[in-house]
Image (tube, rainbow, N blue to C red):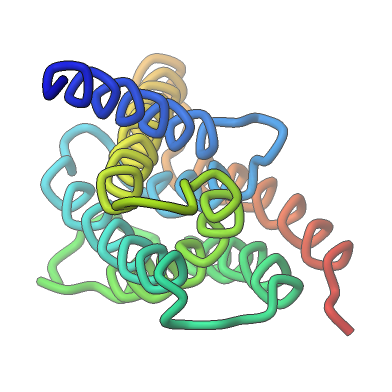
Length: 202
């Protein structure tokens, strides 16, 4: 009997992991993809340590509010969260304009705090989807953990894709790195602005 319970638990874990992965990597809901892109587009493979800290900051932020929301510790307006998510993308895209020499000397640059704080908002956005999937009975911690790990796996795939695309354009096609950053950030800004205007909560 215990073996069957273990197998069932592993199946549930795998299902929630897949749901988390598909949720962040879903091209029909590109807001989270755009945010990760806006965060990471200033970096390249050589900056992997800084990028790791950046992704960790975002992970900590959204993990905190995802858990708080799922356990009904915090309550919020869904309409406001859906509006604020593209606002975080807009601000992050604008911050890229101030990157000029790609020399990151600060131990804790401002972008890290953007990632952590905005991660709190994105965590609430993730919870909208997760709450409808969680079982009403029993321990939901494994399901929450699996979903969060799925989110992180999807996020790392997005980061890797961004780094590869940047490598192709900057290193192989020899496009000026700052011009590339401004062009991509401008596109992200335009899409996010349209999303924000479509989601005005008032």
